[in-house]
Length: 412
Image (cartoon, rainbow, N blue to C red; front, side):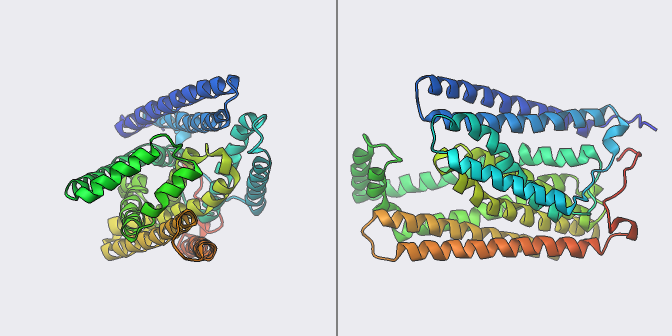
C-alpha cells in the first residue's frame, strides 16, 4: 500500500542528482567538441578529450538513473522499495574480472595509436574502470543486506556528487593554505624570492611536462623539506579528511540502518562510487592509460575497504553507542590510506630523483615502493573478504545465503 506521506529527502536527492547529471553532461558536451576540434586539427589531444567525454557522459547517465529512482520514491512508487540483491555468483565475478582484463589489454595495445585511440579508448575506458570496482565491491558485499533501490541509489549518488564536492573544497583549502604559507615564507626570505624568480624565468618558455622542465624542478622538489610537506599532506591530511567524508551517505542514513552488515555494505558502495569518479577523472591520461587504470584497481580496493569498515563502525556508534570502535576504525582507515599514499609519494619522488644529481638507487626505491603497495592491496582485499564472511555469520539464517528479500513496505 502506498504511503501518503511526502518524502522530502528523496525530492532533495533527485534535485541534487539531476543538477549534477546536467553538469556532467555539459562537461561531456564541451569535451566532445574539444575532441572533435582536436581531431580535425590532427592534434594528439583528441584521444584525451574523447576519453573524458565518454567518462563524463557515463557518470551523468548513472546520476540520471539515481535521479529517476529518487523521484519515484518521492512519488511513493512501490517499485523503488524492492531490495537490491547482492548474491553475485562466482561466474559473474569471474566474467567481470576477465572483461576488465580484456579491456585493459586491448586499450594498452592501441593507446599510442593516434589514428584509432580517440575512437576506441572511450569505449574501453568504461569497462576498464567500472568492472574492477564492481568485482571488488561485489565480493565485499556478497550476500550482505543492502536496502531498497532508492536508498541504495541515493547512497551511490551521494558518493558521486556531494561527498567529492565537499572533499574538493576541503582539499582546495589545504592547497591554498600551503601556497599562502610558501608565499609568506618566501617574502620573509629575500634569497628564496630570488631563487623563485630564477626558477620561474627558466620555466617560462618550457613545456611544464617536458623532460627539460623535470630536470629543472627535480632538485627543488626532492629537497627533504618539500618531501616532508608532500608526505604530511598526502599521508595524513588527505586520509583524515577523505575517510571521514567518503561514507557521507552512510552518515546521512545512519539512523535507518538495520545492522552492522548493512552499514558495511553501504560503506563499500560509498567507497566504490568515490573510486569510480576519482578514476574516471584521471582516465584521460592516454599516454599511461593501461598502466594508470591497472594501478587504480589498488586505489579502488583501498577506498572500498576503508569505507566499508567505516560504514560498519558508523552503525555500531549510532545504534550501540560503541564510539571507541568508531574512533579505532577511523584511525585504522587513516593508517591504511596513509600507507598507500606514502607508497605513491615514495614512488613519485624516486622517479624524480632520476632527473636530479642526488645519489641513490632509484630503481630499488621504486621497487620497494611498488612491492609495499602490492602487499597492502593484498592486505586490504583480505580485510574486505574476511569482514564479509564474519558479518554474514551475524545475519539471520534466512539471510546468510542470500541478500534481504524484496520488500513492499515503504521505508521511512
